[in-house]
Image (cartoon, rainbow, N blue to C red; front, top):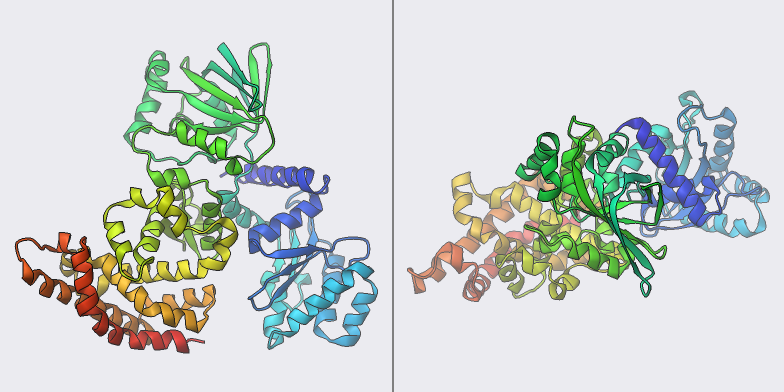
Length: 575
């Protein structure tokens, strides 16, 4: 995305947030955005004011070390144009000294603070003191600014990355906007052959009319297409259909209206004058593939027409939280090849999962085609992708101690995302943070099995044993689950440990040896189990049936427990 557009979009987002939540105060909205983007759903206290002692916000990071983050913020609407004043570094250095040097310095800091803020600062000091050393405590301080930094004014008592400048903020915003894309800019369309429908009970007005396709093409020349379609259930899937749409637009414009089903657009306001309509906060919920195809065309003017249905919302509720609007999105996206999990893409818990995975350098693809949209960004070079459909399979495979979840996975992905099963697999948004560690642990087990090909010596052996993959994952997770619950590792520690399991260290060799032995025992169970009826039981159908699961439990579970003992010890001894 163009850097100028990104800066403009970021400023728009802060302004909108200021108007909605902070009575137009952009400096407060900036802090609120940073806390959400950097730390997620942690609680925080806003302390900015005339007597704040140089502290603008305190973030409470429970179960983290350090357990608090102390922020000083300097916001300017002239993003990245000016350098941060030297005095601001000196002011923040006093804050750091106050918390570091103990009672006298800290009491001096409190003397300059308003009475209602002192309790926050004392609580912050108490949480800092829980950290064993200053090497940890110094990570609690952040100076964030939309200005350019003065490296020569930075001081050594806190890490260099605690000084957060405009470059880092824009990188952070690029990641943030994947999940929380701001509203699109107004879209202007020429209106032909309009029909109107007003739903009094729902307080919505809808319009059906023909529009010029080139109006969309001009709009997308200066606006990011992913911003306009952010609330669609899929991003750009590319392929033959997209090429066909673009070819019709360029070479056979008169046929476009006949061959295209049209676009459906939600907006907050519809303003029309002289047959020219302005759509405020437009969001295309059906027709994203067409817009992607058109945006890549070199032809800016065309006589092609398209049918457009515009639904003007009757209240200010957020689209993602409106069940009726979600049913509309679902209803208009029932063409070919729409999967059950596509309809879950905008669920609040999926957005929160994407945020949690992002912190572990994993791109959680909740919308098909989303990774393709962002993978060229160099900031995601080290990220690993996991589609929502695969996470659903992982959670299903491990959900039952008797292995029935594995049999469910074998029946296909569509069943997993039906309401009855989905609600048991994925927690509500408010519970995602507390359950994410267990979900991440299961995901890393899955990744370890994939990375080492079930411990098979070559691809030929893996192709033979691939039918047992989900059984091996279930068995490994079943055995390690009690140990994992006992060891109380943080999510970051799980990531570090499994990175070693996937590497060539002693821990890595030990983990792969355990996986290899479990895989071998599961396969031996199949070899013995199929002896009852050689003609009936193949690897393909043996692992799909309850009979196969019972045989695996009876013959492989005990030996697999012994194989996993060294891996369990690594989990327990890691800290």
